[in-house]
Image (cartoon, rainbow, N blue to C red; front, top):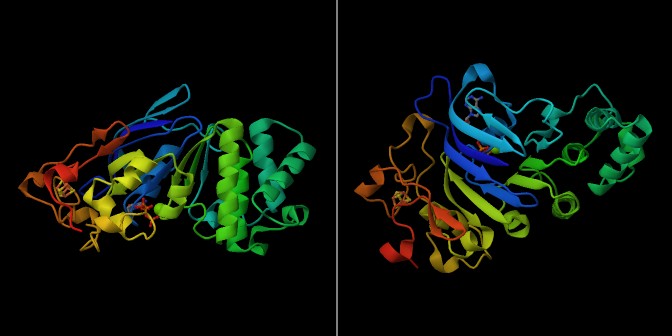
Length: 323
Ligand SMILES: Nc1ncnc2c1ncn2[C@@H]1O[C@H](COP(=O)(O)OP(=O)(O)OP(=O)(O)O)[C@@H](O)[C@H]1O
Ligand code: SF4
Ligand SMILES: [Mg+2]
């Protein structure tokens, strides 16, 4: 899946909430998207799925390629038939996508039958297997229950089982494991890896957890205020972060071997959409900002698998990074 140059704003807002975002994930690859709360990760995912409210959203640029399907997002979106089938999404708010009025089993089986055309006995067996694979005990009993009878963590696992039941080509997972305890989280990550190995599924995973990124990602994209500021192979970005925001983000995370390059805290807060600085959106918080930063820095290659949107990257060449 390739997303190119997505720019969108909500009606009445003075700046784009997603600003020229490009993301690409190859077959069998896991791309993690990280960034502070409110930076536009979920909005980007919802735009990919064609799930933003049309009357409220203005998409001024964006192109999406999934397999052989090419879409100009300014005037078309992923057809409903592709959603949940070729492209599946696990939502940040699990309760919103389970219908409280129907039993868990009916909901999972209904999507399996709709997408594969199998009979209900096969669908039920597959639903049971998927519940087992996401670590739900007594799956036969759970299939007969209603969403309110399950804990929040269990509902999230049901959503994951449902999303993965149809072997999607692309999985978009928005904070899929945040609410789960570490054992279950590890099991879900294993399941995503297994499906990638079995079916070549590509995954775009949104997460706050750099530990999850280190564990599962092939590549990582770092977003700040609606823009991708750094992206690349996970080892390149983690071992050698080159955008001041990424360095700050990672120095808050112990155990990544980045302690030597500490920018102890990132001062200030993320600018609001009505207060977005021109040029580099990070410049109100950046220790390295100069007048050059009033120009928008382009995302450019600084190593074969590593792109950074900072005028001064690679930083070592310009500035001595504070120790
Ligand atoms: N339908 C909407 N109308 C107007 N503004 C919206 C809408 N949906 C989201 N926003 C705003 O867009 C911005 C980006 O939100 P988004 O949910 O993508 O953030 P996020 O990166 O997913 O954050 P988090 O890590 O907290 O989930 C936020 O300022 C949010 O308030
Ligand atoms: S372009 Fe300027 S403000 Fe932006 S991250 Fe680089 S040094 Fe900081
Ligand atoms: Mg979100």
